[in-house]
Image (tube, rainbow, N blue to C red; front, side, top):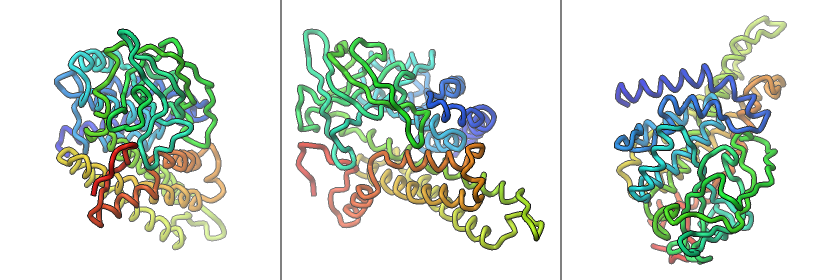
Length: 393
């Protein structure tokens, strides 16, 4: 990265260590949105990181953006994940939004620190293989009307707007019917059960939400039907997930290393770090993290010049390695620390819980490997199948 880019990442690293990380355990325990951390990142311009400079944002290239998300994740996985979801909505608005939408929504973020969620998951539909929506949107007079149920609604009760994934008029061919709409958080007809008591990623606060006749002004329609599947933005969800996973794993290993250096055991009266078995474990984890980080960095560096299919491959390989390495590192870090690693006073157990929970987000490991294998075999390697469309290759 350039000196300016490196300075930004270093600034965020300092902010994360001094302010964001110390709050992480509190937000995790409460299962509450990390509002103060969002505000700190807004003041640093990070909520506008994916907004073009012409609209007052930072306009970060993908490599710098991924480095920032990974840095935040070292201190608080939940803050990093929610900022990434918000930033991806900004990319959709920048890519398929109208001039009026860009002017309005970007200004809300830049000047007022507003956040946007992205709600696509549904109770009866698996996104591990195909994009399919049962939540419907239909035109009614001058407005659109949304009906349906969404699961895992990140930043519910925390964001100001939500990008909701719908099937226009209930269509099943998502290449023609997938419609994104921007819904105000206080729109009448939105209800939630408020239930979010999970193993990890508790501060993303992602309960189920029901839409019952929710009216959306015509200017809330984002892009044409099916446009979201063609512009190469969906794929960056997984690239950002990979950055979050590796940031979590790095923090877990750093804690285990520090603990091993300071913990003195008897009868030898030497630090745990002097144990050859611990040294081998630490060496293994450090090497695996280095390898996964190199793949992530390479994928991010190639991202801006890649087409939609290549972006899918870049994201799949980064997320696959980050998933496998992250799960292994966070588990082994607790083993290195020993029984105390399970204490909630220490960050290792939270890292394990957050990693195990967040790696369940699509695409799954099996789907990623399938897509990577298809690419190697010269077959269609799109990250997701689009329901109703004909396969290529």
